[in-house]
Image (tube, rainbow, N blue to C red; front, side, top):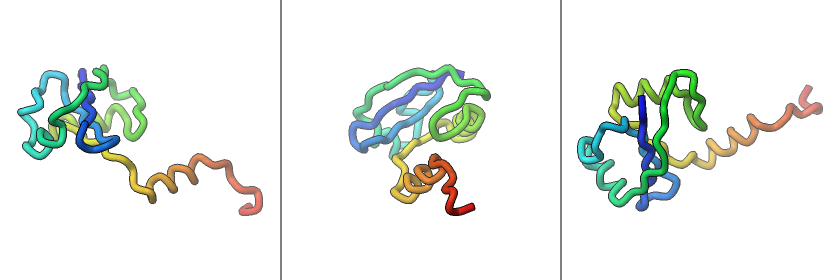
Length: 95
């Protein structure tokens, strides 16, 4: 499956993943407004094994097939803190 990734000019760090063959005007009106204007950032060849920053290729394919799109929004401060903590080596004092 090929997927287009669009970047919103209206909302920072907001991306829309959609099947390559799907026209923007076929998606919900709220998304069309949020992504008009937009920049097509890239086209991805998706496979179940592909790893993406926030989800697996299998999960993205599932969402594209079920919903017709995937909206990626910036993580909240809480999400960023949890991500930072998960990337830190274990603290020896905690053992």
